[in-house]
Image (cartoon, rainbow, N blue to C red; front, side, top):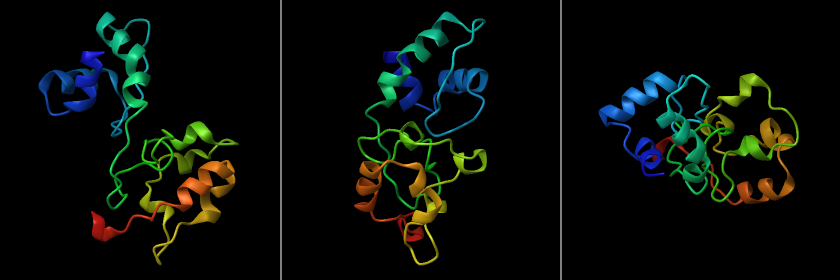
Amino acid sequence: MKLAWGVFQNSERLWVQVLRSKYVKDQELIPSPQAKQRDSVLWKGICKVWPSITQGVNWALGCGSKMLFWKDSWLEGYGPLHMHTSQIIPEVMLNCSVADMVDDRGQWQWETFAHFLPIQVILILAGYNPPTPQLG
């Protein structure tokens, strides 16, 4: 567990950069590592405890341009939103940032994503102010 937390917390450390470059193909802020049969015992152990590490993590939203709407844990207490969808999210939408889900007037683009989410998540999201570029 301590090593997994190190991978999560210390992205600038050389040993973390080596592991991430070898095993994590997409460089998300919070990766979703998957162990393969040929991977090292160390990496398999990190992957095994990874859900426990990321479960309680939430990001400060800021301007929302670096936060993935569906994949990152930015909505407090809910983890990645793709875990709560009622239908399959189109591939082109999966890598949209939180800022991408806000219109030019600074309002949530409900018509873009609300039909994918259950009402309890939508109600929580409605209590969040959309990110603005000034918060960057």
